[in-house]
Structure formats: C-alpha cells, structure tokens
Length: 133
Image (cartoon, rainbow, N blue to C red; front, side, top):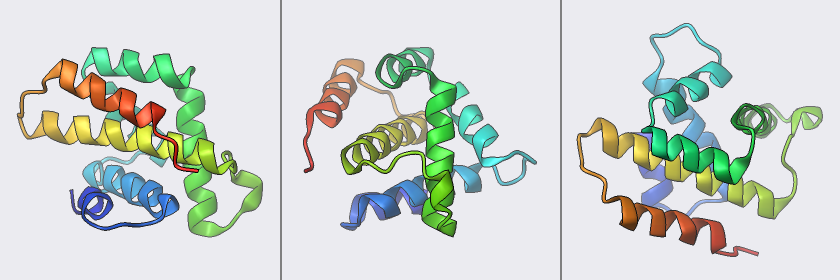
C-alpha cells in the first residue's frame, strides 16, 4: 500500500512509479515463493474478470505484457539494458499507467470498496487517451 501511495501523493518520474508498483506487488505476495512474473500474474488473476478482459483488450497478450513489465523493471533496478523491454517513453508511460490503474482496482477490491464500473471505465479511458509527451 505504501508503494502505491508514493505514486499518488508525490510527483515522481514514471520509471519510479513502475518500480513502486512492482515492489508493492512483491510485498503483497511476499510470503509466497514466486518470481515477480508469477506474482504479477497472480495479482492479475485476482482482479475481477471484467478488468482482466479490459486489460487484455488494451495490452493484447497479457503474458507478453507481464514479461515486458518484469524486464523493464529489471532494467530500471539493475541497469541491464539487454533486458529493457520498453524503451519508448510513450509506451513506458502507457504501460505504467495501465499497470497502476490495475493496482488501484486490486487495492479497492481488497479493501472491500464497491467499484462504480462506469466511473472506473471512464477513468481507464482517460489513462489511455492522456498524452504525456
């Protein structure tokens, strides 16, 4: 939760947001012996089906998208450029914003907060259409 709040309460660079989201997922599943890729996959599996469908509608193959998230996070954390899956700044922003949106849905769901689907879908469309560069 703290990692997520860092992305909400403070202005930071998009790369830090991606690292914070992945750290949050790693922390949430810390007692499970899973790779980061498996933890993100499990996180997505725990989302309501309609949001998993929404995700795959916009990112295509979810497994490939998770692989890009993980590889990009590895690059951002360890500097191994060979593993950087997303180097285009616009694509990095889009990927991170979509990931952050799904993290928000996950947190709201875990807190038992009812999600107003039309309102959330409108916010998701804003994420997809906002230009940052």
